[in-house]
Length: 482
Ligand code: F0G
Image (cartoon, rainbow, N blue to C red; front, side, top):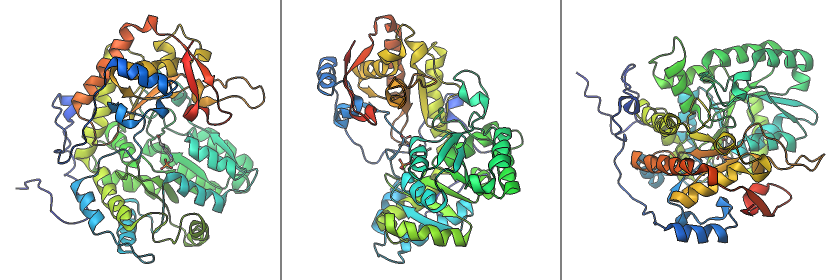
């Protein structure tokens, strides 16, 4: 009989047999699937200290020192905890300029998991976007995506391209339990490709999971339809793979015919439909830095490598230390393991469920990496120009030292034509959960803080700018209560 023990060596934790994926969060048993071997103390602060710290930071949570934050949910990017196997990998990292053993470890992992033979490491995800779009995108061309992440959009525009979001209609609404709100509107894609062809559309991208509308997954059926559409029109399909494992988990959980399949098989099937991918290893690479660009076509690889050398460095290190490559190679396998994912996605759902069951308005269903508070409905007395998302994020920090991030009018900036605030579809606060960092007790503390602010929501005041920078205003703006 199998003991289910994992071998001490090999590429990483092996998947358990299909079917063996207890969902500890659904069952009410909430043990984290790891033991804590190293701890990082968290400083506690009083409400009065937090009030002073907020004032000194101009009520901009980006300008707080992280040591003044009790529970940091600003992002799930680069903030995860590495495993003992990854830390051990740092010691065997090969720092050779060319031909590093650690590059070959990464290449083997990407080929094994994704089936992509050509891999270019990059210093993070946006660098992979830069290399790919510099190779493929020409001024005036359109790049469709289910929903572009900010950096992807900016890199398309930097090449003179036109980013186009073609997410399905369900994906544009905060309410409703549609299971795959990251899906592409395939009819709209078909119409675009029929109209503009490969001359007008150099590539199609699909972001898994879709970060911009709440970490929402894309189904295998939808990816298959997108892939067939791309092939019919001779346009390459690239996956923005940052959260590939979380997406595969949702397919395994929610898609008819996919239930209980090993995650690595689902991952294989997803990537078999694509010609390449960009990756930020700061998410499902379980590393603190790094990324890569991977593809099938050797000719495209040859062209991309030329730009990679210019932007990132020799293609066997790509802006990273050998030890980082080793950590990513190991992290990719760990992210694709069922025990890890059941807990990871369950943890985010647990936080969402605690809030939803108490009547707190959130984006539904809860996505893979974050809970999004709907600040517009949370604080209906505040109009967009009083920044309800910013006010709510500030109150959460004041309440319990929890740091989230506004995703609303402040982030959206101004319309360049009219000079007015742009009107984002929703006023949100993102609570992104770092991987393997916080326990259930931390999430309970977050939920308690949100509920405490919810109980006194009528008294929450709006905010105004004291300083508004001309570009990317959310990072450095100053605020005060209105
Ligand atoms: N694509 C998606 C879907 C992302 O979420 C991110 C980063 C990137 C690309 C860029 O990767 O940061 O390694 O250059 N998202 C982070 C976040 C920053 O907080 O959601 P990067």
